[in-house]
Image 1 (cartoon, rainbow, N blue to C red):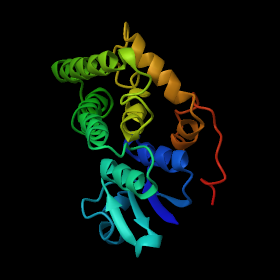
Image 2 (cartoon, one colour):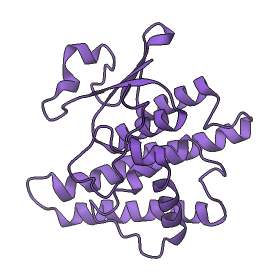
Image 3 (cartoon, rainbow, N blue to C red):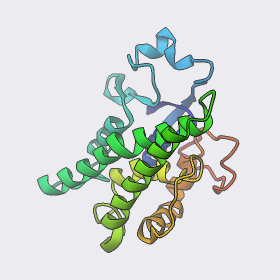
Image 4 (cartoon, rainbow, N blue to C red):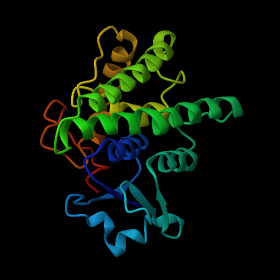
Length: 219
């Protein structure tokens, strides 16, 4: 059994989707990040950085893992799925995982912040992060021009990236002309694990996603 600590954010949804895709038994503990529950002492024992998501693998001596990308790698290696076994294949998946971790996530996160959460609008900052997000989207679009998923088969790179791409409208990122990226987006959105995972925990503005839950998610 895995204890899964999360909130309704793209980084949290990554791990939820992976757990659903792998059909691993887990218990979800939703943290109230507005109340700063993630900064409480008990959670800092699990993740010293005080951020979600995090997991505790009860079957491995209560081993705690934090950082969403690291959790995805841990789950893939534990199950032997969603990650190639060859050195080149593994490296390819990790490259695109890190592309999301170092590029898509931070840039789009800043776009979210400057559009919705700053006390005043700063047009230059909004344009800066929207434009950079669009550039990164174009990189993904070119990558997906000749393959179904980022590394051929479904992998943790896709699972890490999709929860961010599905929120493109929230900060106003232009996706016009990105036909390969949007085809991939729709392919991912049709996967039952993605439909379930991005509702764990749910948020009020996710009515666009089919609201179904798996038996695994409710254990």
